[in-house]
Length: 100
Image 1 (cartoon, rainbow, N blue to C red):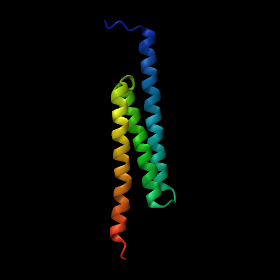
Image 2: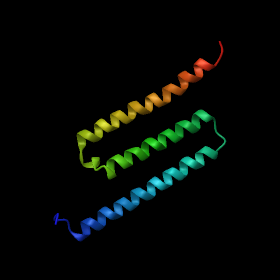
Image 3: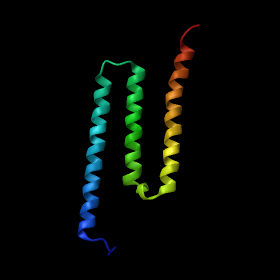
Image 4: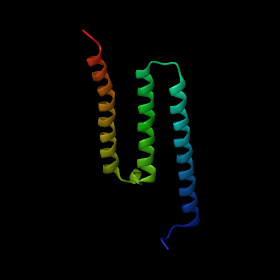
């Protein structure tokens, strides 16, 4: 046995259910945003923002990085850099399409 009490195991299972529900709701919000009448750039920005939040939840809880201080900060930095690149690439692509 690993030495965990029944209460600790139930608490972990409850936390997984809450995170699973949060991921489901964030996915539903992403789908809802896709049907809103907003500018495509804003829709993509919102969808990527939600995707980064979901990725952070998965990494922190299901990959058990929430207890790893250094790893979570490195992952946060990597996510921020990746998010910035994803925001800049469409802007650059649009600028190259528009005739001068």
